[in-house]
Image (tube, rainbow, N blue to C red; front, side):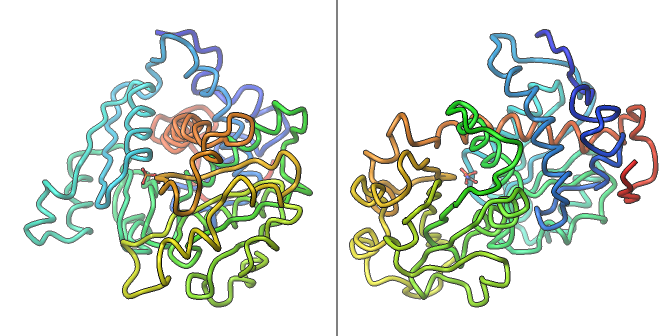
Length: 354
Ligand code: CP
């Protein structure tokens, strides 16, 4: 087993440290269904917990027994590379038994409902269920109907909370390396550009980045900008060049063709002309602006290869690295009550600061 000074504890960041509420009050939720459910200090708590796993994952021996004996089921009803693999790797590095249920080979194809599938997994005594589903609200539907924590790995156009958390951790690390690091993102201007209307990544990031103090701009063609986005606090732009002026971070999103019914853009060529991030266009942003993308990328559509691969500006692969650490933190924190960790045995939902 790799050395793990603080595996499973909250030393340095949690109970007793004074930065967060003590014990289970630091994160009183039984499940992680969205960023919307989280307080700022709860977001910061998960990020602080994830730091130990960033270091751990950089060791040659990346295995510990923290979740030994637990069974984690990844139930993915939509395609995934990053999220599925990183949840699987996260669970295995923590010593859990991890099982992946691929919807295409499951009894969903015989007409079984999502709820019946979840109840079936629950009956197998899963200790955590990670769900990706094409319908917005699918994860909230399951939460509370099973005995174990439910983690949202992306539901329709609604939320992708672990993506926003890993994006925040990747951004914090990149800023730290430049000597611009701080606990939160106060003063930072982040532009999210792409298919905002269909993007769960955009929704979760708007909520997360704003909770951490950033100013968020969203940019999309009118057909891909949701009505009333201002109500979320984000500033909408149709003109990408205008949105880029003064942006410290540019987060590009792909066109979510699988969620579109009908024609939303005239052509991908025209889309790239107006909304593609090229090197020339990036020059309109703040000097040294960072580039992010949750993946999967469509090179030559929303982002050019020479931007995506810029070593000093693009943090896209770092986002992937942080995904494993954040998901380890989420699995650890959400199973603490079941593991009866000292300070975490109490009733849920008190949410009190101590
Ligand atoms: N960012 C993201 O959710 O990627 P996957 O669809 O590959 O999981």
